[in-house]
Length: 232
Image 1 (tube, rainbow, N blue to C red):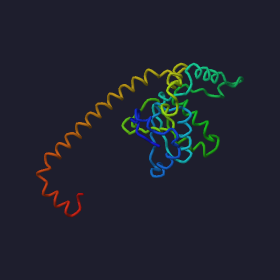
Image 2: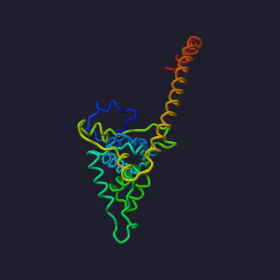
Image 3: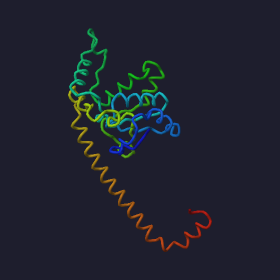
């Protein structure tokens, strides 16, 4: 199921058993060429990656923004130890050959999705090319409506008492250098969005007021249009 990113406080009313991928497939059948824009904030890493992997394999283009806001279940210290252990894995004779250890939250999420795809085949490579991931919300995605996947949301899937870690903080502590810059840009984006929304509300209010003012003047024309079925 896809819901607007403002879904937030109302998410608890949805059943956790809802099959996110199944409903997602159903919705995307009607929008096969539309790019699916997902807001990563508040989602669990593995669950979101699994649903995204399925969608790109089915041929849909997916964009995930705000990857620094993705959550990982389990306390932060445990997750950091696991990632530090991963950083020690390398080729002894020539470390430049891999494995490659990404530090940015977007690339960590990308690598998680890659692990769920047959990425060494042509089909898997083509699927991976249909995925875009970003830290923060860069243009042109900052002016588009973002969606969430309830089946992967932390507030739905984890009990309130369970501990969780932020992917952005984990990335910062293992070498990501752009946490402060991303946060600053996010604040600027939110300010611009607030101004844009205020302007939109003002225009809507004035439009309704204008319609109300001319309602009496155009009533006779409206009656004729209703008579012929043009207006209902």
